Image (tube, rainbow, N blue to C red; front, top):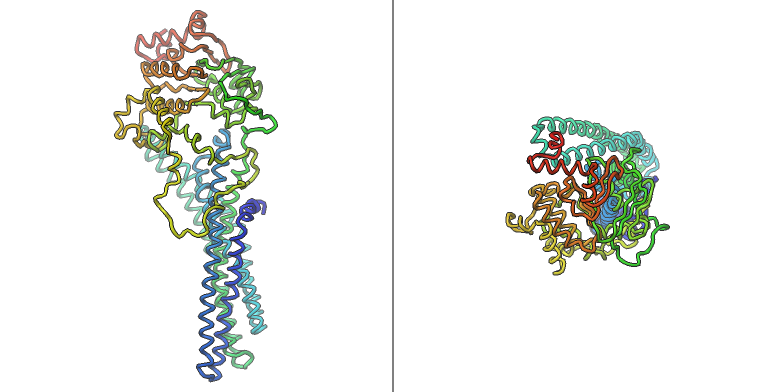
Amino acid sequence: MHTLATLLPYLRRHRLPLIVGVLGALADTFLRLVPAYLLGQAINLITANQPQSEVLPYIWWIGLFAVLDGIAVFVQRYMVSLVSRRIEYELRGDFFAHLQTLDSAFYKNLHTGDLMARATNDLNQIRMMLGPGVNGIISTPATFLVTLAFMFGINLKLGLIVLVLMPLVTVVFYLLNGRMRRQYTEVQGQFAELSTRSQENLNSIRVIKAYGQEQAEIKRFAAANALYIKLNLVYVLLSGLLWPLLGMLLGATTAIVLVVGGGDVVTHQISLGQFVQFNLYLAQLGWPMIAMGWTLSLVQQGLASLGRLDEVMRRQPHIYDDPTRLQPATQPISGEIEFKDVTLTYDNLPVLANVSFHVPAGSSLAVVGATGSGKSSLVNLIARVYDPQEGTIYIDGREISAIPLDELRQAIGYVPQDNFLFSVPLRDNVAFGLLDEHSSQQRVVVTARNSTFLPRNSSAANHLPLFHWNVNLDDDPLRALRELSEDQRQRIGDGVEVARLSKDLEQFPQGIDTMIGERGVTLSGGQKQRTAIARAIVRDPAILILDDSLSSVDTGTASEILSGLREVMKQRTSIIIAQRIATVQNADQIILLEDGRIVERGTHMELVALGGRYTAMYRRELLAQELDVEPEVAAGIS
């Protein structure tokens, strides 16, 4: 019940069409019974040899009530389906918005395929529960109770027979209910595993082919697929038992009614018309009772899926805005950064220890060190991807936790090691950081510490028209997000030029408007990195972070990019992480990390003169350039 209670705010918001749908279901229940009564009366008139003129009005009334019942059924199904579709729309939006608030720790523990299964398959099951499921829940009990009342009015003995036999269906459903729900949860879990394996396989298809692992992957997928089918077959077996058991009960009930009721007709305890009327009522009970199995199945599946969705929605981000600590900004962020005794651990393993440094606004800081020394972790702290366990980070003199996340991250242009490009034209990838500038009025603001499915105060679903008679399939609601101003187009051109991506545009069939493959698969490693750099520059950030983002770019191009960046980032703060000292030697300040600690700091010339670890790294790099080998190889030679 706790899981089901999470839907109450959504149902409450759409209570008007839901109430109309309920009224339609109740009207359908009564209107469906009237023709059976009228037919029984007509049969009594016919058996009494009454003239046709006496019977004809009953036929007209039966037709009229059939039309009215059709209208009631339409109102019921349309309104309930309308509510289910609108709630599906809101749940999908709230689920997606909540995912945006969750931090990296959440995504490390939950596979993408599992999240996709929850956002698609599980959400569809919830919609089915709220649509056909609710229709069945409303109409079936009402039909059973009202029809049973009419049956008792005809003959108490026959009514008792129906009353005793029909509830056996409920007993069968009760016995199968728990088992079916647990089984369906297992099915959904395995479906998520199957989705994850499919996605990972497709994303890593180059690696799989390079290592000749096609057959091994096929076998692994086949095993996961076989388990999914096995779990589904158990569920199908349980679900399939409902139908024959229900058919047996309904058949036994009909046979007993025919024997007992037929005898009552012979002994004139009831008329032939009443007997026909009773059997029509019994036939009308048949479909609702059969539909009950499907309805309960939908409800069980929907509740299991709702539980899976609720599990994610109740996850709280570790990184969030604390209203008690926020300080309003008096001016835009300029980019001054200061670390004071910052310590960071992952899973109780130290990553950074007592790190302190100061980067004046508009200056540049280079961070060098061996792999695993904590370089990426350091810059992740600036964007609050993580929060330190000890120490304090200041931006423009404000504690970083006092700056709203939205304000902080808007001021940062971040180019990570693993660049992600979208399956859209190259221009849209470069302009990605500009989308918030012209869609800020439409953005959904999700408060942190969202404890459950908290619906937004203003839901776009409430403004959707009740009926959609004209649907324009050519209307693109995302067009506004892709319309850029002349100033933004100029910024895109400047960013492409600074990132030295402009010289590659001639290779693309449609230049900057060329559609690139998924995750930028059609681009080289260097082109991906330069696209990501252009994206960060176009954002015009106060703080630019390049996390080893020139590793796939040749030294000459890297030098050109850094030269352009020095011009663009005047009065901006830049932090550059690199493996090659040649790309960072012009930085205003360089720090060398080792095992999460700063072991050396200064300018390039100061560190070379120091004759320590930095000097050794620099000499290895010079030797590697001279011998045209990797620095690691040069280290072995030296």
